[in-house]
Length: 123
Image 1 (cartoon, rainbow, N blue to C red):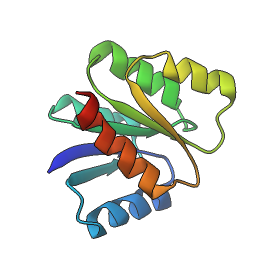
Image 2: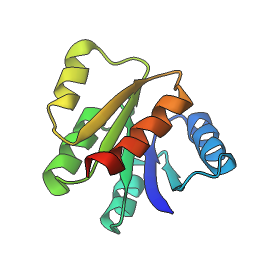
Image 3: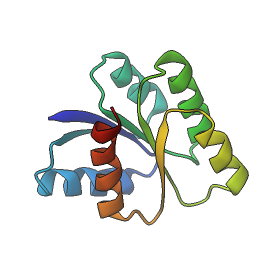
Image 4: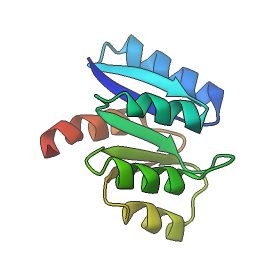
């Protein structure tokens, strides 16, 4: 199982993604967090296949999270999910370098799985 960390301030989104990933019997083990601090603590433990983050959150924004990850863990693949980001925010996020995909909400689950699967192909 490949560990994926999912960070979103919407707890219903987290539960939905976790339930769907587990029910599809995919080769991914979701670790879901609504706390940025907890998600980054989990990332510190290592062995993270993909870090998925929302853009609009309290305290830090997704682009700040991605920038932090790209500086501290430059090889860590990230996927960004958003329902409200503006084009300039998306461009800034993509410039971080380790963002593999930006997926708009409502999330197309098949697109998310394809993005996750494509990480292995690009490694």
